Length: 505
Image (tube, rainbow, N blue to C red; front, side, top):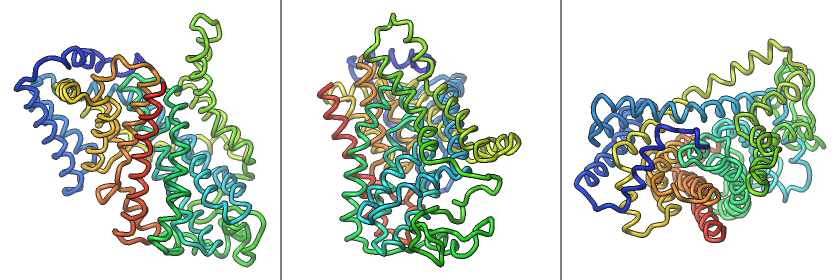
């Protein structure tokens, strides 16, 4: 990953060289300016309701000027940060959006749900977590949430059980992937900033993610269902309620149990409805096996590259090929090309329809990409202004582990801004000076620790908080007792597991 964020590399190395130097007045100044800059971003986003891209841009310019960067260099520093992040991460975000769009419109997502929701009701919480894990691989949290919530609510109605028993596992699966696993924007940005290996991060991320989802999902849902014993309610109930009657093609719409409205005990489940219905341009749906192969293909390619990096000699003639096919850009490009067949022409989409859908997939991610880029710009002025050096000096003096420091910084920014992505990008930039000499495995674990910190205690300044509240029909207090506590469990579990692996590897 050495080609990434080259503009940052010199500043990071310089900061690392001065981490053991004496404390100066400039160090105090840049920390105060950084704190004020973060406060400005928070005020603009939370109180004035300004778009995060503008808020981060204003905050970055303030920090650059206040930190003593020459006026004619401030915008250059910001632009370097934006370009460094988007030049790589932006490509992957776009490819992931294309894959997610084709998955949803082809009916592939419904096929996964249909297959996994069969069986005993007692297994539903575990299957919900698994569904979220599969669906969430190529999709942003908000998209996966919109896709899964109607399914969750339908399953709640089918089982006549508490909504949190099934809702929490689905939310946990989506959230863990968003915070830990590439190709999601936050982890990818942190990988680039810290120059970590994508494949190793992915492999260790899966190792951390599985027990974290189990604890924060199916296990915590037992307690959450007792604390908030509500049934099907909220905006998602309106979605599922609208499913009775005819589907988009005039066919009877099926429930999560697989039956139609007149046959709720059917043996198959399309779990479709409202925004989940298969696209009318499709003449068929991909099979469960084909859907899984398509979705998991980029992960397999990246894991092969990671295995080659660990176990294959650099001189092996196969190594360059495995490095190439396992690069995230290549792996996701392969997955999108495969999806154009399995989720495209294979289900009846014409070339024109495919082109239109791929274009449509890019529209919703423009805002996300700008926010990620602005977060990279904010990070860059923090580094160039000397904030990273000052924090490195504090960490050295306090003997704080870089892993723990990364988690703490991400937690503070998450609580302040409400954005997991902003917290990940900014925290990674701040701790970058301390991570220069770490091994690839330890660098990957620092990325995961930062990702874990970025998920800590979602509250009223996080859009996800309000999405969950409205979809499930919760009060603010109930949302805190369920969603916010679940996010905190994920964050703490992530820290503990990365700390354990950090001490072992």
